[in-house]
Each structure stands twice: as C-alpha cells, then as structure tokens.
Image (cartoon, rainbow, N blue to C red; front, side):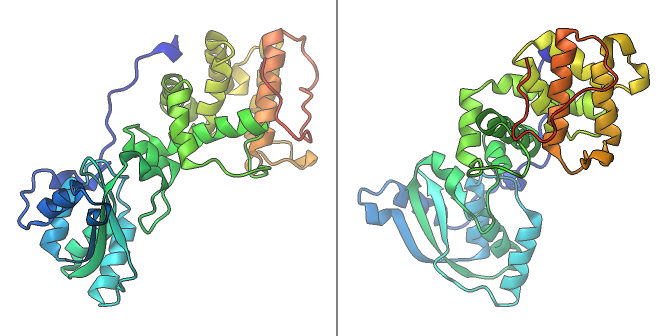
Amino acid sequence: MVINQPKSKEKDSNRFISEAFLTHEPTTNIIQRISEANSAKRMNEHVMLFEKITPPMAEDVLTINTSNRPIDKALVKKYTKIMEADKWLFAGQMWKVSKSGILLDGQHEAFAVRDSRTTQTFHIHTYLPDECFVVLDDGKKRSAGDVLAVMGFRNYNILAAAIKAEIYYRIQGKVGANINSGRVSNQEVADWTKEQNIDLMERCLDYSRSDLHNKFPYLTNSTWAFVYYTLSKRHIRLATDFVDLLSRGEDTLHKSQNWAIQDVHKYLKHGFRSEGFDPKKNLDAKLKFIFTGWNAWRKGDSPKPKLIVDLKADKILKPL
C-alpha cells in the first residue's frame, strides 16, 4: 500500500547556511569566553554584557550555530545594509546560547556583522534551556516551520501547515480563516510531533508531494496531506484508494461506483460559484465536500443527481 512506503532519505538542501562554518577554526577567544560564562556558578555570570562583536568574532560564533532555523537571506541582507550605513543602533539586543553551547538566537545579526565587516554591540545570554528555541524571536518571528526545521524534519513549512490544519480541525471543527479562538502556537506544533502519529503524517505528505498534488493541483500539498492523514486515521487502505481516485480526472471515474468522488472532483476543480462558494478562496468548503463525498463513497450510497453538502454549516463534517 502506498501509505506504508518507506520515508525518503532525501535531505533538505541548504537547510542551514551555517554548515559552511562547521570546519572553521576560531581565531578569537569569544567561544572560550561563552563556554566559561555557560559553566559559571553564579547566575549573573551567565550574561556577557556590552560585547563588541567584530567580524572575526561573529564568524567564530557561527561555528556554534548548528541547530538553528533556516537562514533568511533577505533579512541578513537587510541587517547588513543597515550596518554598512552605520545606522544599526544597539537597543539591548541579546544573543542567546543554550546550556549545551548552541547558538539559539542571533544568527541573522552574526551573519550581518560578518558580511558588513563592521563591529557591533550585543549582550550574550548563556546557560539557557535548549528547548526554549520555540519561544525566541531573532528579529523575525519564528514560524512553526522554523521549529520543525530545527527538530530535523524535511519539508518543514508544508508539514507545519498540515499539522496546524489537523489541530484546528480536531479541536474546532474548522480549518480556514474563521477560527474562533487563539491561533495554534509553535509549541503546540512541536508537541504534536511527539504526541500524534508524525510518521503517518510524513508519509502522507511524501505521497501528496510526489503524486497527488502533481495529478490534481487544486489542493495544496499541505491540504492533501491533512486530508490523507485524517482519512487514514479512519481506514488506511480505503483512504489511499479514495485520494487516488479523487486526484484523477473526472472522466476516468466509473459513475455508478464513484459518483460521490466525481462530484467532489468537479467542485474542487470548477466550484459552484452560483452558490457563492469559490473553491480557491474557501478551504473549509472544500473539506466539507471532500469529507461528505468520503462518507457517501464509504457507505456505498446509491448514485444521486448531486452530492448534497451543507456548505453553510459552522463546522466541517466528520469523516466516517
């Protein structure tokens, strides 16, 4: 069965620009001083105040940038231009280092110091818990994809979107923009990978990227993965059959057996704008059609002129 295929060993290319620094031999004493601060016995000695960071020091610090989120090249370029123009202002910015000696926060500024060939002032806070990464902000809000990247997952942004969809649907019964309560946090996404079936989600995502989205691009990769995962939790083999049939062209479907899937396929591709629902703009309407079609298909309902879907319902139907 497709869902049981082994996970790809493919590694994300260019995940960390800092990998080039792993062979760099430090030329300053900044790493040694960070290590000493990290092992200090007094709490106030864990913080290095008003450090004048030179380009060689920044380059040395980047050798401990081994488990950070992917680099935002545009942000580095922005910081570099500001520093080159002598307009970078010190406002208490603090680089953060974990108890295990890993740079948690400050990588974009370190790259900018190196690239601008300027000296800038920063505080450096050491002896922080490694897991505090998910709540840090390095001048650019950390996304759930950033967190998953650091945790070692491939396709982290798409995976994060699929996981968020699953959380929203399971808790609130809807996935789109009209969410009733607070947004899913980065910590919740990280916790999901430990508490739910992450292996199944990754396999669903792999198949969505390699097959389903290519055949039927009217659903995004993350939506395909969420749908495949949700249905697989009900019945893995039938879920695989269903998404395979749904991704095909409607002309390839046998009307008497797969009429419900055919109707869903037509809606996702063309929409029923006469009823005020554009599938390009309403994700929850798509999911209502998909799960209603799944239920009719799985029960073996006899063919009807049209699949009846309650598009105005507050919540998305639960699949059988």
